[in-house]
Length: 67
Image (cartoon, rainbow, N blue to C red; front, side, top):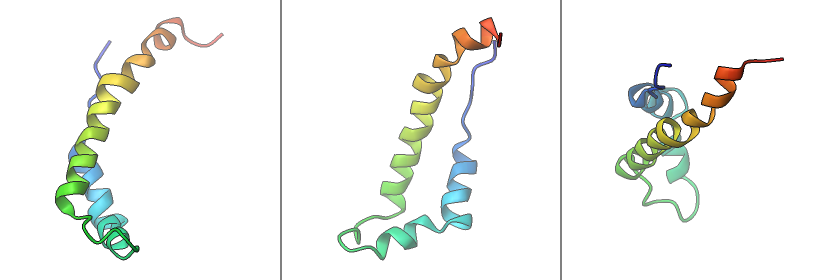
């Protein structure tokens, strides 16, 4: 079975260019300190969570298949 690799580059593109998340979050009250460095750290941790915690949960179901 191949190991799932989440693309950090793709997620950064969606956050930065498609959704413009950082500008939206900075405009909210109490979120002025939110920036690229904090957002990047959150995305890196989300990718690590997807690869190391969530993806392995699918293993048993992938082996048994649908019935």
